Length: 328
Image (cartoon, rainbow, N blue to C red; front, side):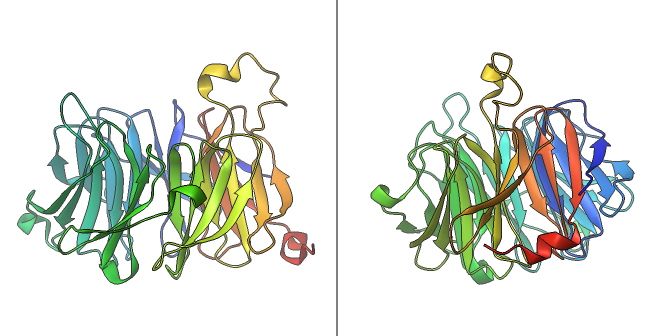
């Protein structure tokens, strides 16, 4: 499995996202400019210029016409995917951390960080089909009880009825997306013990996977918020992904950037580790990054995956034939 090395960012990667057809890969990094690539050969198609801070997150609409990005420059922007033009900018009073379109692309959930005396919040915006009708008003703002602690991810639950959020206080919360009421929190004793860095839903939305700095990833039932599985590893987890095809989950991570130079590169555990989703056993790993892995994404067809690292590279892997016949 030879990776395709994609160098288009000058700073560490923060997020990777395939479109629904699996032919385009969108990447965000700390260098202000999201990129879009062909997902089969790793050729860069274009860039989205306009942010002026690190871009933390992105999402692409179901028909691949619109891109939404959230950035440390205190804005979230809507883009025309094809032309690279900015369509609209949502301005906030603090950096935006996570963005996601709802099912149907009529709504977007955007989280903002704590900043000065502002507490973190989750905003729901209506997305107009015609950019001329787009308004900046929030349909709903959820003020979160956790004070100074960031919300690293907020995603839509099934049928857009709920919003699932997770972050630095290591608690997963489920909110009613109509009323803003807090519906559920996970049990403390079975949850993560440190910051939740990433959260990814299964393709059918019935369960989701969280990765945390406590060196584990956990699989949860979306409706009941019960813990299903736990995957343990030796280093902090910055990114997780779930195969849409096989029962595999992938964990990526490594130590904090601050400690990287003090260790040998082999000791840094900079590999994407594959686990059997059901048996919770490690089945293999993909090495190659020269720094912690910050982003992981599976192609919707399950036949390739990509990883983005602190080293500024995206590595695109098309699986060999024998990957599909791994037996434990």
